[in-house]
Image (cartoon, rainbow over all chains, first blue to last red):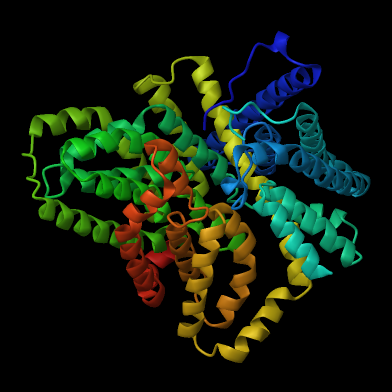
Length: 170
Length: 427
């Protein structure tokens, strides 16, 4: 997968600038999460096999790090490429594919908004009923509502920005 | 009403709406119709956080991306060419092995055709293989290693179906080798028919290629030995692979020297993993609603009227999955279709591990079939050839793969041989 070409930030609209800085931040957090996941799982292997002990809380942290990496990666994929079936779209003329982009982004933003609202209510419940010793796990779980918010926001931004230039990936 | 909604969702999916959005829309509507709070969808999504094997997906993906960006495909190609290039049909067989090897690591994302196809195509033509044969070979080879460890699709099937990933890796090994052998025989046959003479073996060339590629070769060997020997779990193997690949490309080969190169590889990994796991997360909610609505049971009741044997069921399954493979990419198909067919397969006495191999074998063939065979798209992009030409060129390979599919489906021993040996005790 090639990274999208990025014209100079100063020449962009405010929506494109906002998208650019947002994706940079998401990318930074996701990459840090991935490196942490690797380091933590390596440390666990060493602790388990050579020191015959376990790192407290590491297993839970590993699993939530996977969620952080994946869901932030999903937000990044809005700008690059999400998995699609698009069996019909690939046969359409380029002009029609470009015309379809805005409605697709709008539809996606609405659906992600619905999922965001569901995730907020789920997370609030979790926070209310989590025992004090497990509140930190609930804090890690905030990635679900956060990522659906980001997905909604990215799709809405893409709706405003409009179709990409012809040479770029969909 | 329900049918109208399904048709509408299928239509938006075909028009190019991201699959997770389509599944999300379906889940929200299904929850609304069932009178459930949509927060239940998130409850199901959080099941992702309790899957111990999930961690293997980002880590194996990281290993694949780092190796791909670090030039491992080219080094392996050189090594296999020096090792097997002297055989009749040597270069074609080398192409098969190198592609299978690399697909197992790159997760069948199509990167094999992009990374290796462009290198191999001019070499094959230079060795006087016909254009049609070369195109067919490279298009078909893009998904060859799907059944070998550490294939991402096997990991995903294991997570979705709740089947041991180690057992699936074992089960896929023999069918994967049989497919390689069948295609290699075909390549030898074609090379003899064209009248190509094998190149002489050169120990010096092999030694040079081995020096460059030995470290890359050690990785899959280590994974297979580690998992099959019972020394590491799939997740531990993933961790070691990612760490090893990073060490290899940043310290030993020094192909990823700058921070920006490393950043690019890490970022690509997060995007690949993100676009895959969000589908899995959203689909968990939808499939749970479908199971609550007893959809698999209703399909089963319908099937039981006409289907009365395991053989009959497997035949229908093959036909169904070939159609699925024509319409959906492999990751989406696993997430959406597996939860629905798993109870049916169990009812007809099909082992879930065998089902996994049959499922993936069908979808491997789907990579070569229009309208959405991803290998056809990528090869069309890479070799600048119309898709129809590529489909025609791939037909002999496709026919061989269909014969292989029959063997894998109707001879479960090919996938389950290890159950009769001591290997089962390891897992």
